Amino acid sequence: MGGSALGITDGFVGAVGETPLIRLHGLSELTGCEILGKAEFMNPGGSVKDRAALGILLEAEQEGLLKPGGTVVEGTAGNTGIGLAHLCNARGYKALIVIPDTQSAEKIGLLRSLGAEVRTVPAVPYRDPNNYVRLSGRIAAEIPGAVWANQFDNLANRRAHFNSTGPEIWRQSAGKVDAWVAATGTGGTYAGVALYLKQQNPQVQCVLADPHGSALYSWAKGGELAMEGSSITEGIGNSRVTANLEGAPIDDAVRIDDQSALDTIYQLLWREGLFLGGSVGINVAGAVETAGRLGPGHTIVTVLCDSGDRYRSRLYDGDWLATKGLQQPQRAGLEAI
Ligand code: PMP
Image (cartoon, rainbow, N blue to C red):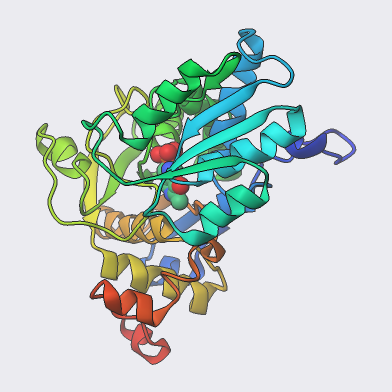
């Protein structure tokens, strides 16, 4: 990852990573802390998952599991599949993506446009054998020469973040990080960065942000996997502790509701000019809550995972939000936040 001395990157692969670390002005002034967002929506495939997809693919190639013309199979909420579809085109593989039919039409349509074979399946819990992740594993086993990316439990995922996202944050902030806050889907981003930052400075506070409908907040707080409610956010929350999350440092956890996440992404749009997805609302609201706990004068880093473009028909559509019992934030109403 990264560029050459001449500033030229080598293809799609070379363009992954080295994203800006953006100071969020409004929220930094509001909290008296430096609130910094790693601009992962600027990756060439449009999300933080480009890094995991690349790490998984490169390790599979190195291990000799993936041969030219081979197939990469994955169960994904969308972004990992999008990253994999780009990478498969760039490196001569086929992509077969299994995705729950509850995910946004934008992500499913994009996967098809990129040339992936897409199988939409009903969203059922992980304990059900037809859960999209488990199904993708079985499909991979049935196709000769196919590799199952297995992003949830393949540690190549968090290694990609340990080796790239973490060091970039440390370098870009000149080592001035007091807290790292992120929601987890696979846990790769949260864990990889948390492990790296703790290695540099054990004082860095690592805070897991979780939406409703996920069991990780109660697990992080009290050791018990218990969930309540639901969330319109996509790609985050989990009912289990994945191999990628296992053993990651967790100093604290915050739970953010959907309305707060929505208010946050609209505020980022109107005050910062940043058009971002729902998990960013959980992350940035979590960073603001952490700022409140730590007090002024601290530097808090989080992730801007993907663009609002992937959710225009949902998060940025008042009628759709109303069907979920949520209020589309109004510009005038944001002054108080
Ligand atoms: N936000 C979005 C929009 C995602 O798609 C994902 C990955 N599913 C995440 C956050 C969480 O990333 P990770 O899998 O590294 O925990």
